[in-house]
Image (cartoon, rainbow, N blue to C red):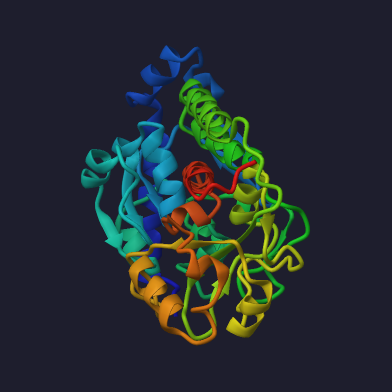
Length: 347
């Protein structure tokens, strides 16, 4: 169903190959040389989620299929090398509005394979294996058969089982080092390694500043992403877990390794978290997407209105991207840390 017709495949392959060949003489070479590297660094091969991704030159027409990776590319100053974006849960990260406005949005959600190929990509990136898997935009193999390399955020494969059902489960807790690894991969791929190191250093400094002197070891946090009937709540070990560990708190659902298990409200009432971290989404796929809708539900539903966090209005609002492994996870640490201090829950 998502496969391109035969008539589309041959032109796409020719376009991708031509882009890979001609990009060597582009302005990327000058950019790379300014950062102490050269075009001699190509072909470059990255180990990525069990795949070898080989780039003959710095990409010129990347299609980024998920917001998380898109915002990394924009933060690296690479908007002029992005030919299209897709799958947005939130407004673009503050400070990246101009970059975002300059790049075509192929779809607010997942575009078709054909729509993606129409952008003539020489690299396709995604934040999730499902985006480039069966039932997604297309498989990695489908793109690679056309000569288009693909890259998936390592945060969705390292220490994670995506075949366990739902949003997958983690055998190992996610760390920010994995997010930093994606930044370094992409900065190498585009020949702008120094920009990547600068961005990583900036994010690390923000985490250190936000968590300095923080002790909230007696505080339990619950993260609600979406859906009011059968809510998606964070398990122990994804991006919310990284936030929780950074601020020194406890997860209300530390006993489950599922990424986003659907949990009944009766179970939530039994756990009675001290603080509820709420996803404030702008998409319209589930019930109770916005923070306002979630809070309205919490304060009127008989199963939740007597929760400690609800009674004391201890809510921290985060973007959906801050609840996914991304550079916004740092924003999540900052906001949760600030909330704990505001609520007087820090020792």
